[in-house]
Picture 1 (cartoon, rainbow, N blue to C red):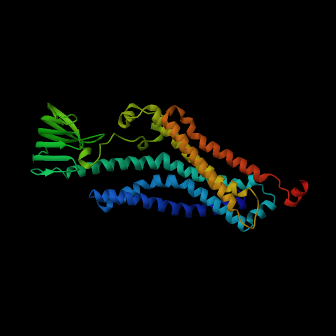
Picture 2 (cartoon, rainbow, N blue to C red):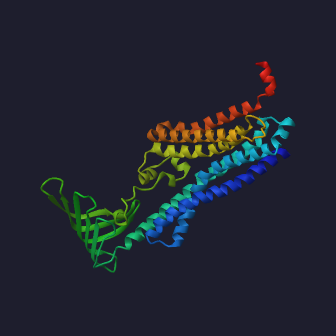
Picture 3 (cartoon, rainbow, N blue to C red):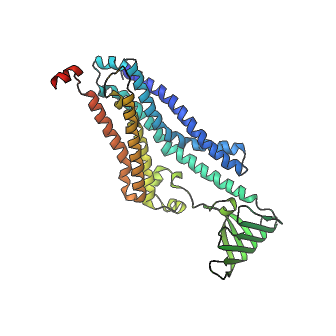
Length: 376
């Protein structure tokens, strides 16, 4: 790597660090505010809020880095153009293809960072976050286990426990679920236990009865069902609808490429959907060098101008937006039909083609304007 390559690479890395820090801070603060409102509203401490915001940081960084790479190359190229450094480099015989080499190296470095995040750090952070959410759900549910009083965890839910035995059994439990306007379901049981499952805490009731009142027609109807034991999802007690299991994003890429029965049962997903998630992770780092090259190649088209390269910057932003729209479209198409997983690689391929076309346009020999007018 020559001195010019090291100079360009160093400058891009400095600008990248600045833009990444600013964008991550802005994005992270927005996420932290929403988490703060939710967790503090549930009675959690500031340490829990801090832990949750830290666990969301890898995902935030993986989303922001490609944008920061684009901003760094666009700003750095604009600065070199404004200070006539690009003109001097091109006058010394360096073509746009040659000047793009350190920028490509910079984009690959950013892509490597994103790859480490999406393949390692983000799944680990999401898995830890899911575990902590389950623990907090159980803790919040336990707050309502007070014997001898009627409690109303959420609107439409009524809970009464006669007493709690020394071994943790709930004796004489009554639970009414009237969240639906046209029906109300009452559960009563002699004994009950709270158990932990893969989908969240469950209330196991024994020797009880279910009374369901429906008022859909003119005459209300009531049905009674007796049971020896049954399970009730305690997600309703904390204002949720229950957890449907783990998310595919909590698992490593290798496990998603070859999903086993344990993973599929825990997530409730199909094998092709798991492999689609893996391919989306593989395709995500490829957008980083594309974003970096777009910010550089678009600004080389048109040559030097005393009025700056703002028009080229606008076209670079348009190209980046187009690649992002193509990414969203490909994700939606593959999401509707997992067999279309090759579409997730289309945005990076299209972005690479745009970069090649822009560099080709920048490398074409230009004639002075007065010669072009005389030729016409």
